[in-house]
Length: 562
Image 1 (cartoon, rainbow, N blue to C red):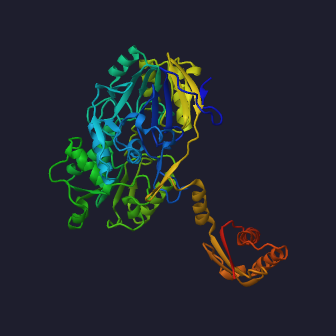
Image 2 (cartoon, rainbow, N blue to C red):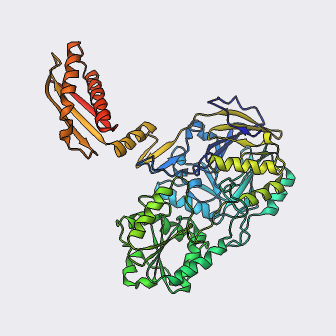
Image 3 (cartoon, one colour):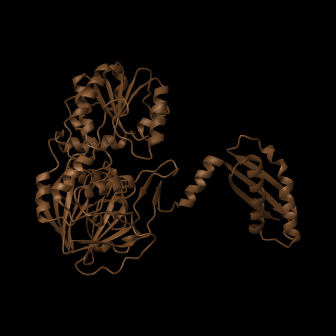
């Protein structure tokens, strides 16, 4: 049967010599936080270091990082961080890792490193970067890395093939097998076949679309749809996409040029990333087509295209602010808004709120559900089957996906003849040891979420988020009571104030005598400690509010001695 993660926490044994240890710290059971640590002979190599974007159940959180606790005491053992491509879910946590050790070598393609360097500049970190290209072979400590061209929704993506004394691993990063890519750079299946002939002991493959049958639609099929929509639009056009989706931006620029429209980039990350892509030659910008957003009011509506961030409903992104009427761009009747992206699981409600807000303002909103305005950047089931048949790996560890994706990927591997016992479904923190072509489950680490909240990193806990949810959903009640320090008798209050309640504060008049009586009983029993008295107030008020108002608000009792 398919090998699954160990139940409960199991400390992995000491790593034997000439054995490769593989520990995914993120990206398993989730879309994001992609990060895997490889270890052999006392040295560590990291592939990808990304972030996860928060869901509605994590209010106030900006980003979620991988848990670095497994490596934070071994930072000097890290020989390199290899980045497969420039999406945030693969590079976004690099600044936080480099805060711990700034000189870790960062390895990747030209565009990937340009994007991370710009991000690190904002964090005031000067990185030690090393550009690699497909076909290049480099050694980092005991790891030999060979880089393979793969096609994705961002240019310059690479897979990495690791050769070690413990065995070989092919890590795909995110990829698909578009046969008609906009940049002409296909996934190098000839290179895959060559590696398959050499022998792949462990295949770690992108699973995001493993449960989607067939083949992913070619990027070129989006162009005609965009061109048609641009031709039909009579007023402004606003296109929202990921700020690093160079291919989609290229198609928007081409469509705008065909219809005599000017394009303004909206959103700091969009402006920054497209400037980098254009400078390096990955984005071909037609002459005179770009304008500054400050100047769009000087153009007629039928000459304007806005290329914006916010396709996932992020609260602070440009498109969400437009939908809320909190942006300099005012969306109006007859404007066309195109969401040129897929929905990341967990973002659905936020995206539909943005769509509803824009529709209410009179815009015609076009999205993947009603037009072909986006194709995925991930290999579907048919493409993955090709890979398994070409590579014929001995063992398979599906990565980059929620559990349904991981299981679907494992099933595809088994369909091509890979034994069930050689397919592994892991969790973040699962530990695998590879030696002589055999993979064994060696342990399970205790890893958590690391939340970035403003300038704080890792200080917000799940308990804090629970408090925030309670505040947002159930409201807040404060109670102030002054008691005599000697007798414990109430001499002032209780003074009760509520927030987030439809009822007036007068509704609490009924519970005040109950609080006074409970404190009197406690005083009669000799209780004088203010903390103990506060708990009595909490229990009395909480029970009453639950019975009377059917609510479980956050309660903050304050007992003052006088």
